[in-house]
Image (cartoon, rainbow, N blue to C red):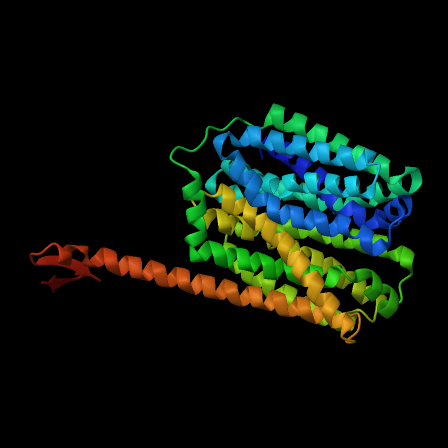
Length: 412
């Protein structure tokens, strides 16, 4: 794999750390600014909404410059947002810093996916995308726990200062290692927008929302579920999240590897297994060992879909994939927000802390159905194209003899 992928992975590591570390530091931030925990929660919600909105906007703004230069500008935006969060004198400024940093998230992963895929041979594209996303998954194993520890010991401002420094390292790596690939000729904004008229692109994005949404329906409520139902101590939630992160790392690498060999079968297997494991979590949540194994599997199966889904969008939006790729990153965050909301609804309705697992299973199963529909439509389109190609000589007028299965058929 090219060293340029390492630079992209470092940037992804920083982005993944800043996205999730705030969850472990909410009490400290709320106390320092004198706001409630629910109010401080807007630092999470605001970031997610910024990703959804920023992905298409920043990608469109970057259509006039090279992808390398846009990646560098996005890292500068990421650094600025985290510095602003680190020195924020008031909660509103902190929230603004979170939103500024989030604007870089979707476009970085969207454009980065296109760049990563362009650095390798056609049969290694999903693996290259997965390698970049490894930075995001490792952030959940190393960056988030370490950032939480530093924030609790030395202050949350130090954590965000260190994340900004990670951004500087990522920026330097991109400047030094990522080749300045020439812009693809003939690609305009209208071409990028035209990708959204392709039903296969829309289906892939819907699979992203539902499939990864299934993961967050359960993981959003892992703390109350494992402490109230499983019987773990509050301090155990951190290492349970580390197990989830380890699962993400392994699933991401496996998904990228096998998606290059058989993309849709990989999606069938991952989404189907994810739906089953999420459903089983309602039972395994009552046993500590079984719950720990299940949480690891959810991370693995959930992230085994990321590189395949991202590559599916790139394949179907061929010729103008950048905007579609970035919007698909926003779709991951949209799925997170939707599933967390639905999970909260079933808990509030009195179905218990394990009820979100059923929501997640239903979402993952729905994504599997869309994958089957997508493949069926693709096969039907290929068959129709083949029939049309065979019929071309008949449209040209005179009779001709065309070999079919070793015989000659007269067409008039």
